[in-house]
Image (cartoon, rainbow, N blue to C red; front, side, top):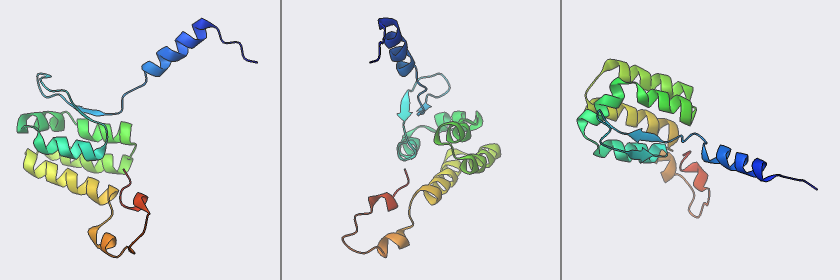
Amino acid sequence: MSNISGEGIRENMLKASCQIDRSFYFKGVDNKLNLRAQNLIVFLQLAEGIDNDTWKYHLDCREYSLWILKSIKDKDLSVQIAEIENLGEDKEISLEKIKTLIESNYTMPVKSLATRKEGSSNIESLQVL
């Protein structure tokens, strides 16, 4: 039989509430935004809608590749995105390149979807996210 003191319970609750949030936050230069992307799908959706200055701010700070490395834990993708960040291109070009990389690494090609058998319930094959 385990004897857990009130102090031990409070300590465990504190640790649980202090866990690192692995989301990406689009904040912008002056922290005017607080848009949370908790996964790659939401990241791409939010990225499409944010203003050019916010996108460029995070791009220039190399925050996209860092997030991919630390939170998504994909070193190869992080390196590829870092190469795009280093180019310093505008939002339209850099976002399209990053989107292409993410989609090619984390979604099944449309051609493969078309060849799936009807009635297949293997949802995991559609997305790795």
